[in-house]
Length: 632
Image (tube, rainbow, N blue to C red; front, side):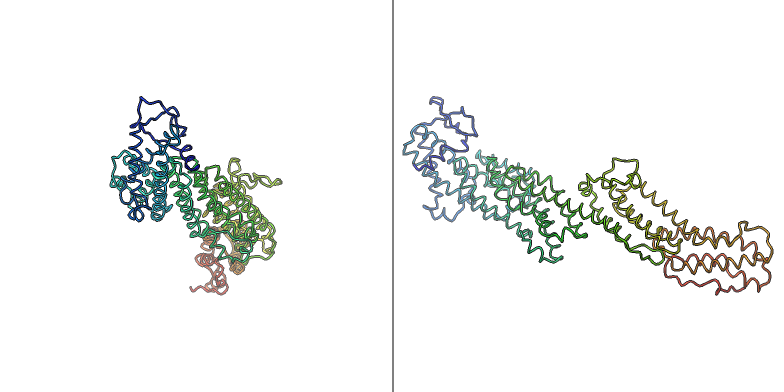
């Protein structure tokens, strides 16, 4: 007997129950099997041995491709699933007999004959195993397998038991789970057949042949899937030659690949492997590792490879969003990565994903630190016409508004961020009384404090002090608006927003006082006190002149924010129009003749309100009061 054949008999993986043929009158024989009680013993009479070998011979010869043209072109599992399972049951019985004969009579011709039958039968099962894997590629694709819930696998398991007991039929398997779709049902049947064959071959000592076929076919499917998802290794020279649009597409493909791989490709492959080789943990691990480890390591190594080989990519400010997308993809899928690649032999995949996560986090921190530095280094002394919003404010707030869309992962990346040593946290803390807030909240407040301090310095370049306050009001209001309409509001909190809204009101009040103070002061404190006609005419003239001068000066001032613009207009109207109306209605008659009215009282309170309403749009063609004539 060949050495390999003896080894396969002596070092088998499973010894199925054979109690129906046991005889209490014979001495017990123990078998060294990892799947049965070592104390269990099985004995056979010569008649039983002949019967078992004879039954096995009938099935083996019938389905031997070398002796039957029918067997060569036909699938046993396709023709009759019941007969296929009877075939494997006979092989299990034959194996038990051969184990008995090895102990009783190692030179027995019956043992040689049994071994010959077993070799032929295993070739048949190899053929069936290969055919099922090959012809059901579409139904055993990882997506179909993954969609099948684990509960549906329980239905398949029940059907398997019924078939093993001889109580099931082909229809029983096909309709074991009526809730499973047709595609999923075919997948379930194929998995059940593969599992049965694998268990039979493993228990008969032919695990190596079975596993080789499985690894070869399934690895090609996973590798093909990764290729279709656009995941491939590239060299640093290729990265440098790839333009921005192509690189963006590669990253987009990678992001999609991570999702598909973890929800279908690797998940489905793990489920299939666990099902087919449920009988052996070591084989399950070996198969899945061989099939998926290389592809998964390539997938999760992409971010590291990109950052290591493309220095320009990791130093470009705008790429922070791509880095955050990749970080999010790995972070959100980490539970699945940790679960699917839980074997020691797949630790390299977990390590690769974790290292990529760390590298991505470091790059994000670096880019945000560089962004902070560019704010501090911005040194342009040019002013914005009309005290409008500075380009730096637009740039910073647009950037932060998008960055904080990733506030959850930013909280992880900056979990150990420490405020600058020379700063007082209470000066810029979003919630000065809540030290338990995540560091990312304080980081955002710190960056905004740098921006506002930089804006304060730029305001000093205005020659008109009132315009510098309008500039500050506009810019801080833009900051608040962006905070209100982004995730910054949740990071900074209402206390921070309220504090800076108060600053905007103060800036607006200072602008109003300095820009419009001359107009306010042109009216007397006591608006209804008795005055001479000469005094009345002088006050009206001074009011006209100061209003005309101020409006001409402020016609180019802008307030882009509608809310702030309306608030400033409402404040000016309430104070100025109200005061002027009271003075106008009280002293208009004391001016004298109609000619004096036309000269000195050129504006009605309504005219003043109209002039104010046309301000701060930045495009007003102001009509001066000196050219305005009322008709009486």
